[in-house]
Length: 313
Image 1 (cartoon, rainbow, N blue to C red):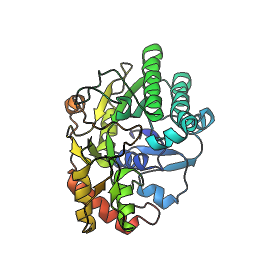
Image 2 (cartoon, rainbow, N blue to C red):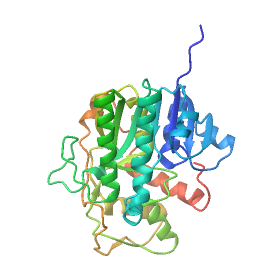
Image 3 (cartoon, helix red, strand yellow):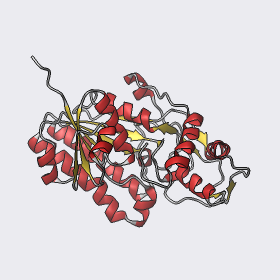
Image 4 (cartoon, rainbow, N blue to C red):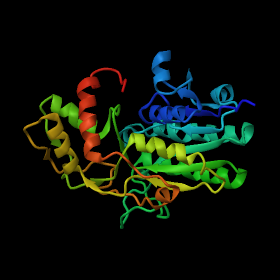
């Protein structure tokens, strides 16, 4: 008897995180349905593991049309920027909270066997007094982005407890990799291409950097962990790395003779220090495999080849 191929719906699969998640699910043998905004050819979609692509808003109509018989929904659509949320708080709310509520309500109403995997963010922690950041800490977000991510986590927990929806929440730390066209690495390469080498902050700020390919593997693993208990896990490396160290490596890879100069300004909405407690993910058997400094060098090579054209790699 022929084995039924599992179907997965990945919202936002035209975006940075979504396409990597789509690719790893495709490699694992899933039939991948993509939903969200963006235009690409059939061959481009196939290259990222997507069997069907639907350009549409994430709402109840689209979910009823395209989410039939999926075992898992990975909801990568939504806002992905603290800066965007500061200047567009209402739009950030719509993209983050409203769309996730649609997904949860769709599962509750029409597809109770479907699991939901949600990419939350370390932004829910905000400023904490101690490090590393553990999932049992009280959220203290300091940006609309973090507030909205926390609201979604509460919705997920409520639907799991009240209605038995099977959910897993992954709090992502500083995700990077080829194809990312925002945040520090992109900004630094863009500045260097213009001969600029000044940056906000002091360079002593720390982040927990995790490669997008490792994050995608975490989402594949989380599919078996989603439950009405709504587990929440950190996805990072457990290593705090200074911004200055990251930029020094990037400058070297770029071939820049200058060194980064820091102006000391405070970047609103971003805490100074982040590092994840990764005990839960380690217990799941997940371990990051991409070395940060090598990942930065690969990013610079990608930027030089693709930075001024559409993302293809």
